Length: 296
Image (cartoon, rainbow, N blue to C red; front, side):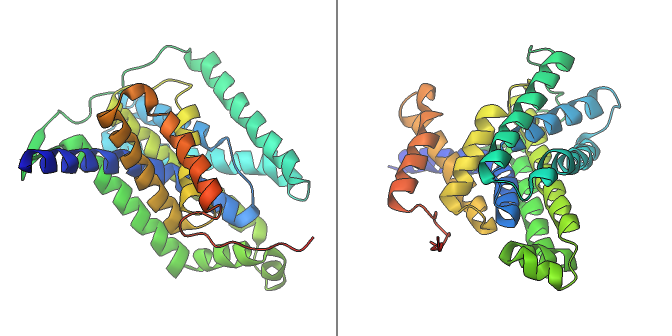
């Protein structure tokens, strides 16, 4: 019995490590949707760019992990702002389907440019942390998992502080509630939206670097499936709700690890879309979302 409990706890720890990465990506989806009601399908590719930026920062510029992480977040934030200004801002007042198709187009553009520049062959991420394993109450934790959990938790706390206690965070909440009223109150809505894209892109880049150290493998197409899973996590938690994205990411990670432990790894991607179907049938607003009626 004790061995079974230890195994369950072990899988739970592994799932939380993976889920914290999904949560970081899902936060970008949910913040952008909360502000301008756009599903930014290029977000998964920003996660991929972050992984490559961290890779080159460590390999070429000989940076240690944390400086490389910061550089990846800054550069990805810049790309997020550029994408918002060039691709999404001109369509701000267009139909939602036009913005959605544009988001898919931006995603394909980033993927194909990355394939052209970096080639499709996978690359081994630098081994920035020599592997060490610790046994705590019969559960094994390695130093990479501890770094992932620590960085993800720190970034989520920083995000919570920014959104709840800073002037820009109050502006973000005001724009999410009513952008026209916020503009009348003197809030620079365009600046707030650009900041939201920058913040979400920085979190996605951090997730990309963390995946690099965890799986020791990156490639230009790596953003597709994790991006979709993070989107499912955002829907699961309640799209547009920041705490919901965190909860959804953790649930997705635990569910994926549980499926792999109980069946085979071939089902790990199917579980995400199974969860999406169930949540849309039973609670379309998500765990923390609230159903809103729209007048037509």
